[in-house]
Image 1 (tube, one colour):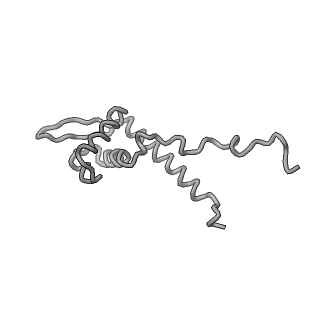
Image 2 (tube, rainbow, N blue to C red):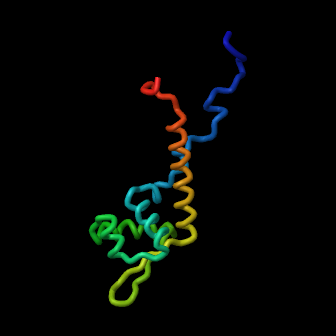
Image 3 (cartoon, rainbow, N blue to C red):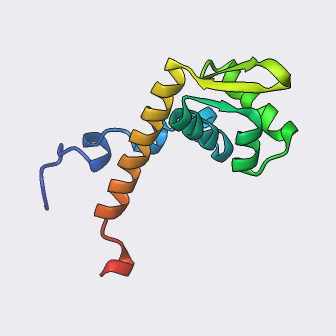
Length: 118
């Protein structure tokens, strides 16, 4: 016998894998880009986002709709037909949580001994 019969398995002693906490609304590549740029700029113009993310206006509008419905951004029409996007407090929290989960995933990968490392 190699150990106690009632010893917990690794799955029983570990917390859930960090990927389980990734938010599909935030994690999608374009939406993560929108949130990141909005975080950096505090307020960003629609055309700037479209250019930076290399999207069509329709595609960007769809992604903004998802984020707005989730309460992560606020979209406001401004003067001269300009549209402004602002990150909400919930959006800031969601972005920070996502980045934290991604850091946990990176740490796991960097500390895992893989067959290629042997």
